[in-house]
Length: 76
Image (cartoon, rainbow, N blue to C red; front, side, top):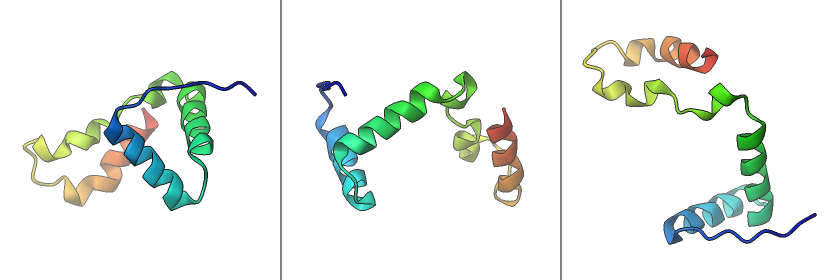
């Protein structure tokens, strides 16, 4: 296994350490997991959900249709 040094902004480092502690794993384990998920995910899966901005859609039925919207976005 190779050792790699990565410089992170303080806020991101804090979030990384908090999540590792919350899950009871090391920062290294969480970092490897995140990199693996990113690099091994299908190209389309790397994008953010378009539904994340649903609050600004101008539609009033988003909360009633959230399962449908998320399902559609996930399948893209």
